Length: 256
Image 1 (spheres, rainbow, N blue to C red):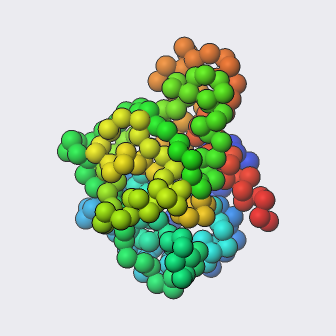
Image 2: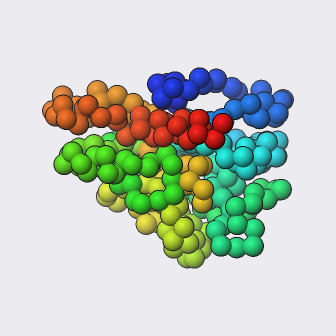
């Protein structure tokens, strides 16, 4: 993830959660935030649970302030599991009395990433799509590859998870997210049983983005599963992962 930010023109700093908890005000100096994948705290209770509880209890005011000032954030795989439990996604609803206002305390969890429908860990490259959405991270991706006529080859991302099945708390949530343009990435096939084939969502502003696939593992075309067979017309473009990080860096620069 640090490599993705750096190659997109940012100057990343890798900071341990304990260091942030010791000095939450540190977050005020950053223009971009990333929550990486992995197995935080060994997934000893559930994926992302301990990390999320620590965010909610110790860092919510600082993260809320960052969200309110429009800091782009990305959360991948375990990071996605963390921030949906912490309350950063799906974020404040559109169209209600407090639209766009981040609450003083973490909101109730509305979506979750549960065990894959097949009951097993999956590590594979899978087809994805980027629906029209508010997400600044995925802006322009679908059109860029459609213009080459090679979208099917380009629109793949790697996954590596055992608990990636996107589920919602009640039947009203998925339609609400769809109507608000918060579905940012979908699977092209039934990968893990996710509702609506959802692979990633954003908040209503499009600045906070979480997904189970790993864009940071696809920064160069030579990571593609059959990259040597890809035509130069496609390889001349940035990869989908690289486009996401460039979009976010450009967005951060634009609000300085």
